[in-house]
Image 1 (cartoon, rainbow, N blue to C red):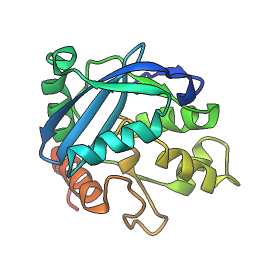
Image 2 (image 1 turned 90 degrees about the vertical axis):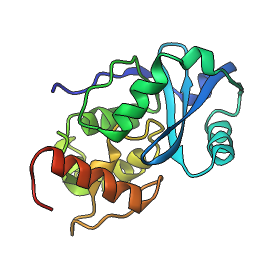
Image 3 (image 1 turned 90 degrees about the horizontal axis):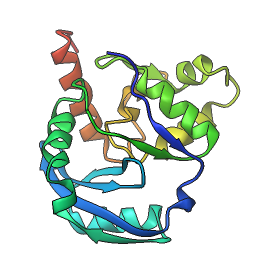
Amino acid sequence: MPALKLHLQPSASRHTGPLPYAYGQCALGYFLAARGRTGLLALLIGDEQSALLTELRQYFPQTQPRESADDFSDALPRIAAHLDAPWAPLALDLEAAGTPLQQRVWQALCAIPAGETRSYTQLADSLGLTSAVRAVANACAANRLAVVVPCHRVLRNDGSITGYRWGPARKAVLLERERQARGQQP
């Protein structure tokens, strides 16, 4: 499958005004999907809906989030299916708001095939940023499109699972599902 193409935006701070969102559920827990001007702007996963809304407000403080399940009636089932099977394509427009470095890293993450992983060092090297491993890791952490921009496919150099915003247990589950889907052994 070709790398996912993101509609890149210069900065998350440019988002003002109404921000429609809706909740859904998948095998990973609850998720919150928010739509920006050109596509899915945020996809957050967690255990509590209220915590997801708090997180959305922190990321986009100049917006007025408004729950609008009707705006997402066609998208929620596709999002849930993608979260449960991240190797399957997701036919939605995506809007990734971030710095130029973050956007480069997110595009590189989308090029990692399902069932494969990279270390933060390998990812930085692939971008020609050998001395900026920490900046690359921070860009991974700034991802607001859970699973869709597959930051879960990046591990420490020793192969251990750490630093996943949505929890290391979720990261382990996602990686195991992808390995099984590709017919790989752990």
